[in-house]
Image (cartoon, rainbow, N blue to C red):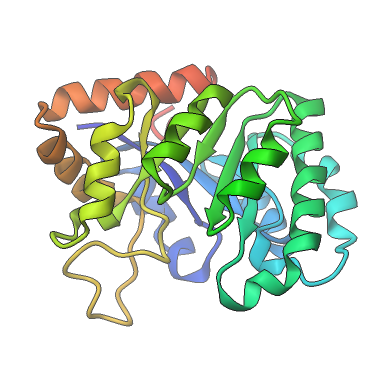
Length: 257
């Protein structure tokens, strides 16, 4: 069964040597996210060799100074196979809160670029939804994709006004993760997407291993859990996610193409 992984990081060394096998698997389409300058360059180079899609942006984890890379971002976004800006956003968790003013400034600069280029945006947000919502209201963007959404039901409803889509990954495979199981039930199915965030997150069974990384082929575990939680047939879920992907990206590259 063909499936889409709309958020992963294929440029990481743990995954690069698997790309050939990933392209020959049941995964139909992949979106790989570059999160800093060196990552942008790697993703673009790999996308010339393998048929996956790329998103590029400066992740809030790397916002420590007024990065000159943001001024360089437009040139990277205009290259072939780049289909979104991201992942970008705000993160006020622990030490990252120290840079929140600069995070907001750089987030807004990248949203402006997305607006000018007509690109969807992949959003990372943690403990910052008030500021995120305030900033997003200033822009008119084609679509927003909330990576590994963990906000409240109230914020989900507010964010839907921005043509937002919400992705879920391995956390829904955890039997004890009641929050994400509740949230995925609340997302309109026409706004639902699935992801692995590989190699950073892992499915159950790989969590105990520090050496065994996840990759987009593990998206099957996410689809199986989502179908069970939503009480729908796997084929119907696959069709719905594909429709949602094609709603955002009409020319989304497929691994079999």
